[in-house]
Length: 259
Image (cartoon, rainbow, N blue to C red; front, side, top):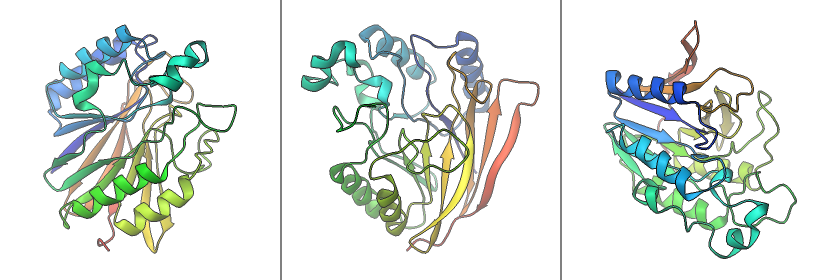
C-alpha cells in the first residue's frame, strides 16, 4: 500500500504551532511515502515565512512537493513586486516547488492555478492558464500507464456545493482535459475544508479532493490534513483532524481504467 499525506494552507505567519507539531508527529510515526502540500505555505509571502515553512517541510524527512497558493505571492501592499518579480522570495522552497513525484503506483502532477495578475478585482481566486494545463497533460502522458494520477493544485477547479464559491477561471475546461488525459483525482486546498467529491468528466470519474488547514485561520473544520491510501487501482481519502474524532473516510473506490 502507498500512503500520501495531503496538507494545505499552513500559512506560516498565521500558523498553528500545535497543529504543525501534531502533523510532524504523524509523519514521523506513520512514515508516508510522500507529502503533497497544495499551497498557501505562507500568509504574506515574506522571506522569513518561506524560510520557516521550508525548514518545517525539510524536517519531515520525506519527499515533498509544494504548489503555489494565492497567499504565496505578494498582495496589494506590494503590488509592484507582485507584477515584476512575484516569485523572488521562493528560494527556500525552490527544490520542492511544483515538483512532480512518483512513488509506488502513484504519480503526482503539479498544476499551477495562481497568476501574477488577473483581469478581476479578487486576485485570491484561481486561474488555469493554457501553458500550465498543457504542462500537466504532458506529464500525465509521460507517467506509467498503471499508475494512479493525482493532480496537485491550490484552487478547486469546480464549485462543488460543499465549500465557498471558488470561481477558478478555466477550471471546468481544465478538469475536462485532465480527465481525458487520465487524471484520477485533483488534490487542492484554499477553502480550509476537507472533502472528496466524485464528478463525471470525459466519460470518466475524477475525484475532487480538498484538504483542511494547519493554520489558525479555521473555517469549517478543526486543524486537518488528508491521508490518501492507494493499493492498485483502489484509493481512499481519510480526513485526519486534531479533534476527539480524529479520522473520517471521505471517499473511496476503484479508479477508472486509464484511457
